[in-house]
Image (cartoon, rainbow, N blue to C red; front, side, top):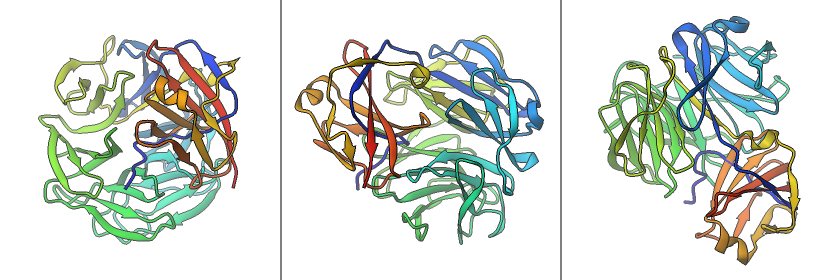
Length: 373
């Protein structure tokens, strides 16, 4: 099975050159209901969302959408809309009810998926919202271990959800087909206790944060246990990836973000400048997509409109990966140029996407495409 490793998108047209922009990292202060913003280096930049702004209470996740920042507010049963640049509260975004919303992401169908911290069939369902805040549909989950958390997709459009579980040691990861039908348990609790976030590693393995186990576990693409990739963590909930591939892990109990190299070796505390308070999420934002681009005559894929795009031979020599973003700037997929000479976008909703790649000199390129069936 080919994996979608963490969530990105791709497209094409003409390619644009943008001088290397630094990623921004957003981390919660759950206990005081605020959000910090950091540079790639881990240095504190600003308190982007002030304490209790807009009634924020127990923030659980962040999704960037255009100029907006959506934050799930668990204790108020709302998803709040803020201005991404200023952090100013705008409004309650969801127009239909949510119950204890936890983790969120924009799926291949351009719908916002919201998991809920519920212990019953009705309160543990996954909600799918249109991007105007109205409810689109519900993914019913007949799961014996509810309290739903992080989630990802694979290249075939299958959907994976971490269920934290009621009580210690009974969490699992479940798999659903693209239509929302349950395909059963993908990862059981033989080695796993209580999962929070899940994501695809660059080699196609699934990495799982275990809150009570204090670990990041590695499983293959079929859900088979491989190893305890990182252990000795203090209630991990939240992660980020640095441009060099190093992993950032939010350790909730010790109020820190720890950095690990690609082999899982601890490199030290990443965040500096201010003490975090009960952090439980981290989200990376690429400011490239707020910048006016300058045209550069390079073709990354052909055609520019369609659902199957062929990589130009020169691109494979120049780049290792192409990152795919949707029009909201959400990373949908990493395309490994060493594994394929084409990219199939047929599982994604029609619309505009962006291909982004960085060459060996550190120069970033961006190209627009249109996915159309």
